[in-house]
Image 1: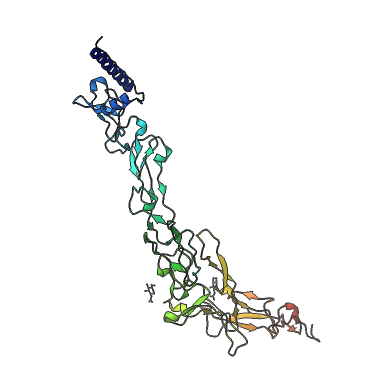
Image 2 (image 1 turned 30 degrees about the vertical axis):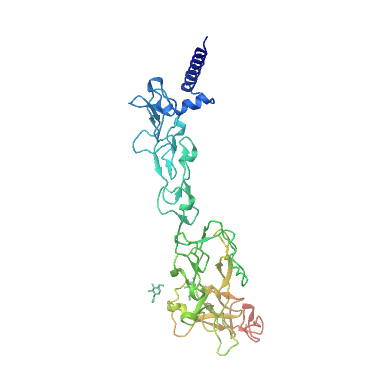
Length: 407
Ligand SMILES: *[C@@H]1O[C@H](CO)[C@@H](O)[C@H](O)[C@H]1NC(C)=O
Ligand SMILES: *[C@@H]1O[C@H](CO)[C@@H](O)[C@H](O)[C@H]1NC(C)=O
């Protein structure tokens, strides 16, 4: 054999090796040999007559092409199979060349309309879905809600960062940032790297909501005004709270508790109360209501105070205030009667001491309600019994006795 024919034989052997690799390829097995890698480079030129490999389909020109995005190709002579049946559905593939239906996915910002469906719909406003999800995955059905207090500008949001719109009544807070603690002079603010999270607006301030901006902080109510709870959305919610009035006018006006009165001053001062959440410009906010002459009041009704760092889940503390007329009281041995000039329809009361053949209340009595001194029964008079050391009034019918020589 000449050296030339030996070379020819080697050439023939090489061609045989390549064609058997080619059969292996069309049956779907992997190729690791140099010849296989070489062959793969030329794959687009393979003829449709030989059958295309998975992820490819035969073209009309007789070649094979990568399966288009949105379809998958089983290979052989099969045409691309669209992930979605209808034109308006939205299952797709992440890239071209998909080989199986398992590569049909729901794109980010979308979800399946229902289980088993190939119809997708956008995540509604206020929700998002990140990444591609296989249609068979439970994740393909669900969009995630933005954190409470935030929402998105539009539907079909694809990431948590799209939840950048604050709802009214919330502000941006950075986790780990110390609230309410002023820094020492000259110290440097700690680096704030965490994403801001929405928090419920603290009491006595208001938060209008709006587009993401780390500088969106609560605005304190002016003049020390209160809000009824957390989460106020506008300055209109800044009020004079029950049990308080606004002392003074203008910028220096201050929220002040209702006076509970004094009987030792001259003239005496009746107790007062204030039942409403009043706008500061309401004339009723300029003073608390009087209980009536000689009637005192006590701060004994609860008003909720929410801690500055409450996230909306905490319980308020209760401050005691003189809110309603239940805070007004008369004392042992006293009665409560209509004051001169007032009518039952529009009553103004005053306290009286039941000291002359009549008996008053046995103990402190709260509320504004007529409580006349009860006259002793016929032919009886009060003696020096059951006489209150506090008011000098009689407080028990036992004080009424038949005088000597009667009965
Ligand atoms: C009081 O203020 C509110 C808004 O805070 C306003 O709507 C109202 O007209 C004001 N009333 C008076 C009497 O000025
Ligand atoms: C006292 O309060 C009660 C209950 O709120 C109310 O019905 C009554 O009219 C009030 N009386 C006066 C004098 O304000």
